[in-house]
Image 1 (cartoon, one colour):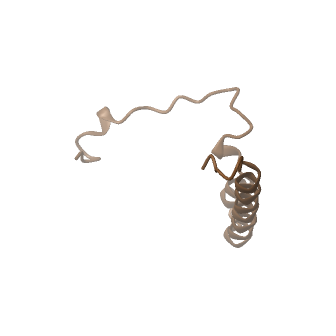
Image 2 (cartoon, one colour):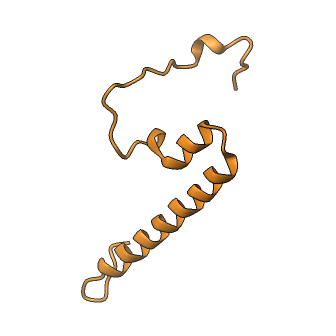
Image 3 (cartoon, one colour):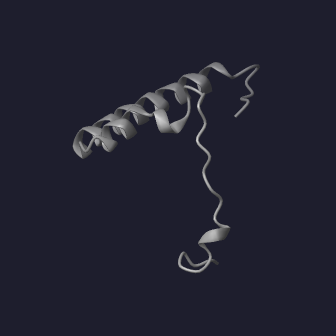
Length: 72
């Protein structure tokens, strides 16, 4: 364990990256809305994103079966 008051020098420093991938979590629409201060709208956006992810997972699962065997 470490303590923030005494061991902070060991915590790695974040290095900003200029060309981040479009899939980077810092670009999530709900996070952008949350940073603007609209917590209720950010929560709605998060729920929307989660529903999209669940739907995508379901589609991938249905389309990966081959000869009765699933890759998942």
